[in-house]
Image 1 (cartoon, helix red, strand yellow):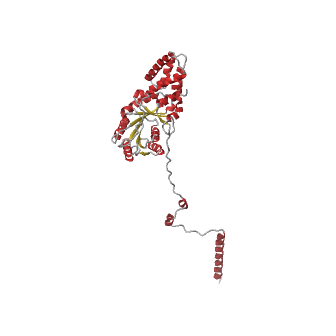
Image 2: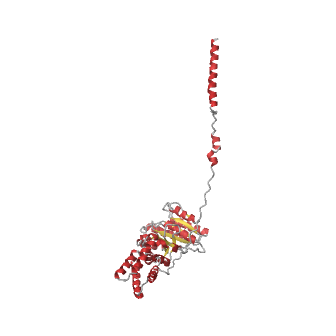
Image 3: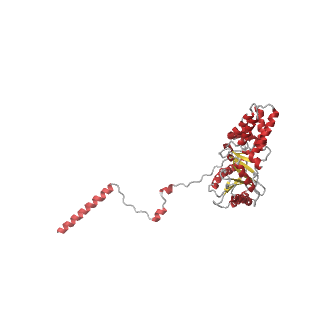
Length: 374
């Protein structure tokens, strides 16, 4: 009998314990445990984040319209303020003195040489100025300005052909090869040159034959995309001549007007690299002529730029000069000396860091800007 009583008591205690545990949990809102999804179900059902993700649409690059090159040098004349004070206003101030004695003429010579006009050209300019001021007798400000302007334009070369050979041939595009030493901002210059050509109505394809500098091809491609010009490039460290060849071949295939080939900067003293540059040109010429070989020179390097130019001219027969950073130097006379020493015309000048701060070179406009307002 006793065991029956004990059993009943145990059952009652157990029931009470269960009721005391389950009921409070339901009152607190505790939900029953949900079975975890199987691996298959988890992979099949996208997460909330995935379900809400909207695929991104790549934005089309905005194609810019470069500023027309006609009259661009006139608009950029204020950038020549440093050269103006030395070559222009400085000379006019000396020539305007009441008495032009030997000391004054020596100061005029020093001003010209300091501005990198060159010793030979300086001697000729001073000699002609002395003779003409003696003959004129009177020297009003307007007469002196006209006299100096004529002498500087004559020294630069008013009749020199400075046109860029960028018109296509019946059999293919014109090819422009851009060369220069390290540190002249050559790839940037190449990008600005592409804008010059597009502004003048040419269709352009770029060849990134600078395969040694990792960022060079990316930089050139960025410049090209801004004006709708495609860039042909190769793997880093690949043969530059092969990239140049492929660029010209693609230009022929796409019937573009001009193929612009950027090459790696190199020191003029490194014979191996200079030989490689010659190879690039020879390989290109298997498909057609190289119409222009433009040498990029930094105007701030002064006379040292002439040494660089001589070696490049011997290797690839440069046809024109792009003189950059002319706005940052007082030595604007480098325009005169580089042409006199090398017989190569300055065809383009860089006058700032903006994308359209490169202009076709016009001697009369350049000298007018140097002399400033009357």
